[in-house]
Amino acid sequence: MAKEVTKNNNFSCPKCGCSNIKVTTTEYKFPYGRGDDAVELKVNVPLITCSNCGLRVLDKNAQAIMHQAVCKHLGVMTPEEIRNIRESKGLSQVEFCRITKLGEATMSMWERGVLIQNAAYDNYMFLLELPLNFERILKRSLEVEKSDETKEENEFSLTKTFPIGSPSFCKLATM
Image (cartoon, rainbow, N blue to C red; front, side, top):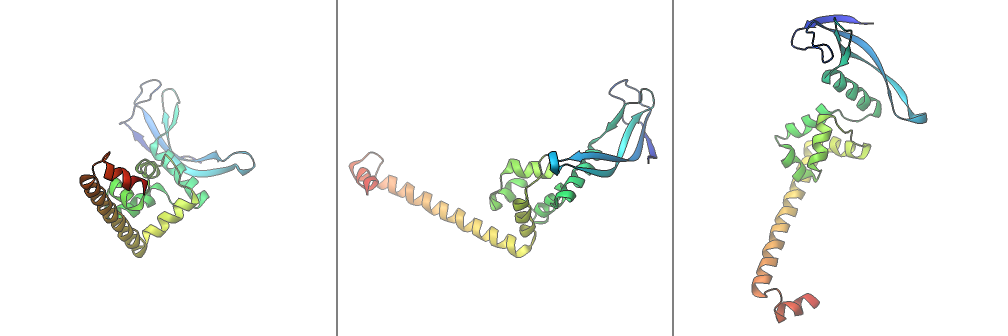
């Protein structure tokens, strides 16, 4: 059942160039999965229709609604929920990933809805939402960084004392 919402004059038809576009909300069914695991999901989405040539288009908003339906079906967080966890900590993607050891590209794809996280990563994100858990991960991350800095300082000090290639360094390397 379609319900007309509005005319959209900010959009022109990619097929004929007409700007007489109608946006309706309609129930849209789409398959998700493969083989025996395939299901049909239903969502209400904005459907853009050209009054001139009849071209029908699902825009980014419709795609986001469909993505949310897939996340709900899988029982995982939506891109908005993932982004909200990071933003609630006041962190950029780079900072959040440095602390949590998640890949920056992965986080970006989850937040943009390009990729859906598996159940294990979804559980990790769920746990990170809880302040105490995030504080523990942050503390652990800071300890590791501090340990890495000390290790680098010790390695620098060692190579300064025993230059690489020197007989003393070679003895250390074989110990």
